[in-house]
Amino acid sequence: MRIMARRWRWRLLGLLLAAWLPLASADDTVGTLGAIGSDTLAGLMLRWGEQLTERHPGVRLQLQASGSASAPPALIAGTTRLGPMSRPMTDDERRRFIERHGYPPTEIKIARDALAVVVHRHNPLASLSLATVDAIFSDTRRCGGERDITHWHQLGIEQPAGRIELQGRNAASGTHGLFRRRALCDGYFRVRIDEHPGSAAVVEAVASSWSAMGYAGLNHLTPGVRALALSDDESHAVAPHPAQVRSGEYPLARTLFLYANLPPGETLPGPERALLEQILSAEGQATVAELGFVTLPEATLAIQRRELGLEGRE
Image (cartoon, rainbow, N blue to C red; front, side, top):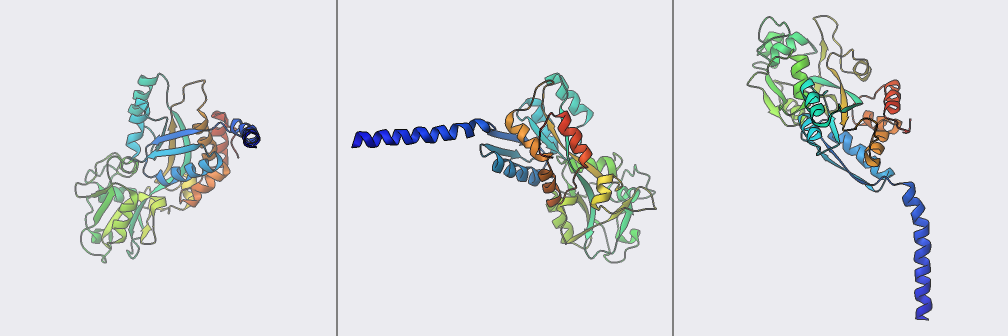
């Protein structure tokens, strides 16, 4: 009887293996998927990683969100194959990548976003020109401001009174670098600005003080702050609404990127390929909107799927 029981157990095990093996071969997308880069994109990357694991249980995403500035060195050194960034790579970062690997990094657009200049929700200020933003956050005034602006009464605001308390990001952040280039015309921040490691901390600091002004990624905004409409000059000011961000009409709209180390003529390994299929799919872009970012136009998604050779879900 014991011999017969053992035979049945082995036969049952063989049947289970026979049933499992076709499933395993059908989904060979397994392994740990590493990414190093943007703090702004951390929540979005992790959500995509969760969706990827639901579809491919053998894949796990490990994300190190230490700022956009950490992505290029990791890609250059080969410690990661994927680098999310809230700004484009600089010419110097691209040059160093090419010197190390012999080919350029692959740039993938994954979402749209905006840098919002925010004030306390009860602050009556409604809009600013970029030259005025520069005169507030910088003393170099390279955008053409006529004078430094340090107090609220210089903006015609009597309440709050006193000095404008400036809140911003630290230098490792892509948000910091992009705001410096676009809003300060490559000028320099005032020394007295309070720097924070994340946009959420900037928003919290502004929400807690009537006298504060800061800048942060659009998806981090809360009911405690209000985003100002901005203009390239003193005339038509544009608020950071999704349609204006997607079209680029809002002056501080930006594209969010994922950079990949992909040698010419080669395809990405299964986990990385599956992640890009997820990001550029309809489901992936629905997640973009859900988390407060702005989706890419379908034409842009289709072009990138074709260029990457993806059969992803549209």
